[in-house]
Image (cartoon, rainbow, N blue to C red; front, side, top):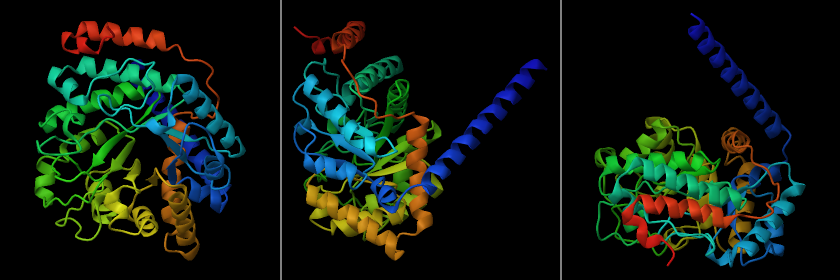
Amino acid sequence: MLSGQNGSNQQLEEEDQESQLNDYVRTQINAMSIEEKIGQLVIAGVDGYENDLQAQTLIEEYKIGGIILFERNIKDLNQMLELINSLKESNSVNPIPLFLAIDEEGGRVSRLPDEFLKTPASQKVGEINDSELSVRLASIVGEQLKACGLNMNFAPVLDVNSNPNNPVIGDRSFSHDPDQVCTQGIQTMNGLRSQDIISVVKHFPGHGDTLVDSHLGLPVVDHDINRLYSLELIPFACAIENKAEAIMTAHILLPNIDPHNPASFSSNTISKILRQDLGFDGLVITDDLTMAAVIDNYDIQEAAVQAIKAGSDQVLVCHDFQKEKAVLQALKQAVESGDISVERLEQSLYRILKLKMEYNLTDEPVSTVNYQALNQKLEALYKDYQDLSYLLKP
């Protein structure tokens, strides 16, 4: 009897906490200016190693929701910490902390500075096919990111590597087997979350069977909904069942789903398949709108507006300050004209702010990073798995 009472009390306590969080988020939204609301819809890239005038403008004037760092932003560990702390300091004029994101997948997609021991590509993790390895590895990566002051990782890749001629996914995928992608992907997601790093799984609805790299052009895939459910969507459905909190959409055109818009700004893909059919109510972020798949075929301002109208919550604009400004201005104009309704805007704001609050994001600076201790954890892990011994420093 006591056990049942304890369970009931715990449920009531959790429901009360959820209610309080919801009330706080709503209060925060009501207190925001139009500039603050629009800014939260954008995660932007910045140039170079320093927090320059353009980066400060995006943060202080346009109130953007987050920053993503690339190799071009990271020279070494000390410089990276200085940049991140400076970005946080710039955001001190805003009441809402930044998403500070990175692509740290392992293998060839790794942005962390050279002081850190490198991690294997997902394909190698999939070949070993050990759930304990996946969660331990991702947990250490999460520790690395958290130590550096980051709070969001665009990983893991949940694309099924079904096409060996795919020019962009390849060893970034865990496997050609969707069930194995599901298993290893969920463990990776859980490992990151165990260190309070937001995991953004990608690239919905699946980039594994393309012949074109969307960085360079627009991939067209003729799969229908039955094919998607039988292969590509399996890992994403699995992630949603395991409480995935954020998903990145892909710039791929699926004519049998939407003949006009790529998945990243297709209401058929986002609102219908992802939200309605798969039941996902978390954060949806587009892939970078400055990739050739978009800018060579669509107007970037129209694409950004359409992405929000289609059900995305944030757009990623990683390059070119002028394009970033144009997107922010287009979103503001769309809200002011009613093209993006206040209800649609506040749905996204709610998801963004709630996730930031659930992870207790702050703009507190980071002082030093004990990267040697983190490297020792990786070395110990690699010694437990002979197939990863090649990653040990000579």
